[in-house]
Image: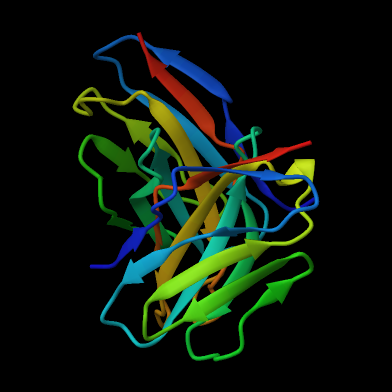
Length: 117
Length: 114
């Protein structure tokens, strides 16, 4: 079974600064996906960024980027130029690659990020 | 607009009663999922379905039941056997197969047992 660990329950960052959220995972699989989801106060889950394990290049989406270290089983999220709208709960998630079946997500416990003025 | 709807947004039930949470999607997705969210525990998978008339237990299926009679709909019943049903429930859907690497989530239902 896979496990996902987020060791930072809460973090705070000032507007326009950079913050990094940590995530580690444990798996014996070689093919998988990793995700960061954002859950703002509305509680709607929003996909922030994804990483395919077979890709060495780190994924980026505008101000969001990841540092994927496959050997270390580490998948951190960097938010640059933080904005007030980034205030949310952030979940790291793991998905084993399946063929022809539903793809189950395993989530970490989340990091609550507060962006301040 | 394509998306996932869950109803109701807030639901209250008395202890010992069964209650059904609705989930509908118009994304033409084959796979659908139910997650439970508790404070400090992230999301945990209750049940999932990859096709009509088929569904599988997730990690915490005890006390829950589902049906998948239509592609668009995947209702979740919280039975009286569920010992601690108060939680936030999220429904999600995705395409099946190798391309199914993103799940789309509904807005959730907050269930409170009185």
